[in-house]
Length: 113
Length: 113
Image (cartoon, rainbow over all chains, first blue to last red):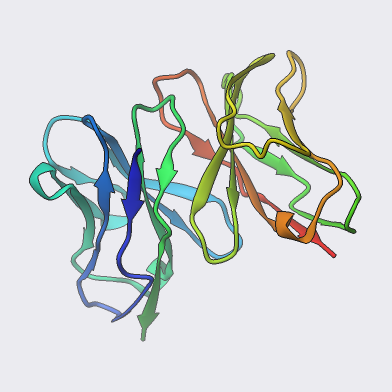
């Protein structure tokens, strides 16, 4: 069965610092991988997605993620964090777009001024 | 193009009452997915529907929960005889077909007192 782990429950970084959020998945075939962001009281917004091709994908708001098949990872990165990036971040995996997604438990990001 | 609409945004029910959650997909989208987010957890898939059909309900509790997506009108997630454990945020997502990304609504936060 497919599963997603996000080892870090809560991360705190200073504004302007770099960020890396970890995501590991377990899946029997080539997965579709996603990162979503959820601001307090809001729905989920898609940051970026991967399903084939270049393993380094660019997303919105200056985020990028790298798919590493050998490590079953899809870590999210940002070179310089802004205070507005404080939110909950979810990694998700699916067989394809049309199937239900399996979400990780999320990583809460706090940003210090 | 308006996004995915969910109403109500907040719903309070006493134990034993019924909860009806509505989801209006984006214009042109005929696929709807429901997810539940318990406090401090990620989203869990519940059900995937197309117009007038349930495609995958593997995540739905066997009792008290039902979902529909009629030919006309919004998708409805119905919870009968609610219990405190049903308190959660319920998110709806829609897509135009089975091979496209899902767009999430803002969620309905159900509180059972």
